[in-house]
Image 1: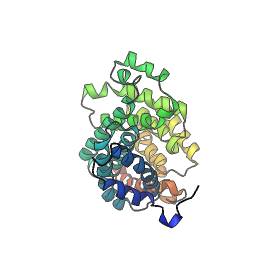
Image 2: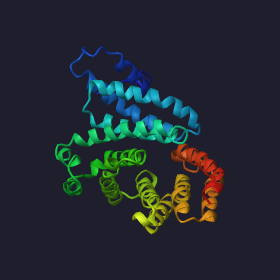
Image 3: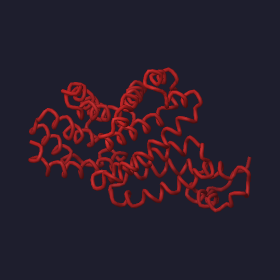
Image 4: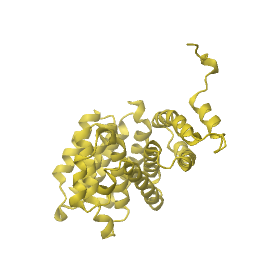
Length: 296
């Protein structure tokens, strides 16, 4: 079989440009061809973004990437891969703007949650459970499959973050048990997923709730320390979030400052795939250190 010379084969970005230029009515399957071609670019872009050390550059570029995905979604609204990518994109962008613009972050987390839930709805057996009361919803653990790991994680992450921006809403808070169940399922499937992010999420959850209202500082400590062990100290967001939530909750000023300083002293690029996250962690650590006297 003859093969196209490498110099003549379009790269993923070029292929995207060519396919996006097609009129929607050119081929009956044009939308699916566009989405399929975008799949290769999505993976490449996520890898490149993770290795960036310029937070502002990524934050400025993110809207264009999200609009590209939304355009692809117009032609293929039920494409699970696109919906999952949108959930990840909106949630990741929200974390970059959350410190400076929490209101906008809340809107982005809502979009991420909606896309994640739509992705999960593409599996007919999941759809009725997602909207059911918690008793029936809990059966979702027996229906979820390993291939659901990514959409479940991004749905739970963005859903929980959205709830945190609506802490004054009893209706929103009532959804929290569903979020925790989903994230605990993720931990059971792969506790090291995305640099132990599920453990960090659960650590934040158990630390954020005061002990008098049912919070579990001991469980928070377990999840944070497990995340530290799994990432071998290379994920700087782990000590930063441990300081922000656990150390504050137990009123340990020394632990708080030690953890934040630890994040500032570590190189951000010890793991290239964590560079962007670590740069964001260091920026947050500096902000939290400035606020030390306000909390202790």
